[in-house]
Image 1 (spheres, rainbow, N blue to C red):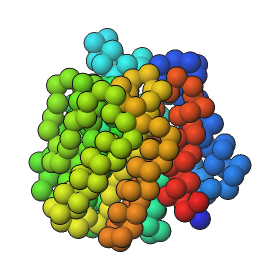
Image 2: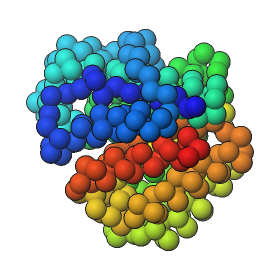
Image 3: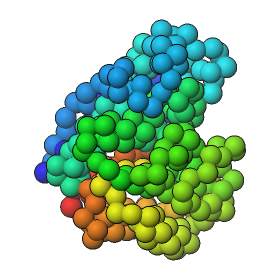
Image 4: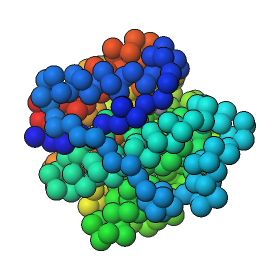
Length: 295
Ligand SMILES: [Zn+2]
């Protein structure tokens, strides 16, 4: 059974109907446990040493001490609290643990993560620390991986990840983005395509079919970080694309089978999801985890 790392107990006191619906994480974990889809474990907290692999010491110090300016907190979109810092550490720790599980078992899941808008010295777009950047550098330092591939299918461009890992010749940052969507100032990735508003299943899957071989052509990765964003969904409040649940499931299968064919372990991250109905976001995430669990 695959392993999944949860951090919903380290939560932030906001109601479900907020723009950033944290209740999705608890509901997803409960559904996975009830259906026996994965073995759920508590996410460890990333240490300062881990976080400093991708973040400036001064930024980390200011985040931990709650000394971000109002403007900086506004960019993150969530007001500072000690719980927010702990949640950030657990989110990165979950990605690191899931990546190690992937290297051991072929697949590992973070029931959250995908905080791709965090830069070395700044957070934004609900992201304080960049989980994938920390994990790539930690695993590389440990000698566990050489080449890494990031397949970012959250609808928003992974600007922070591109900024941190873009210059790394052993990491390929690939993604499909909503062309008219946030972030409005881009940091180019290695392989990416911008899609117009309203893009549906067929055009999206065709773009993904173009993207994956080009990304893999840059060298066989030792691990793939897959940001399985639920926000390209047609009823997402922030997504602007028009994928159905069926299309999103086909997307997951395409990534899964492509990586399996190459023997590349996959660390699955949930990234964004702002469905008008929280049940839809949970259902999309559950389908992703089930798909990678082999159900
Ligand atoms: Zn997103």
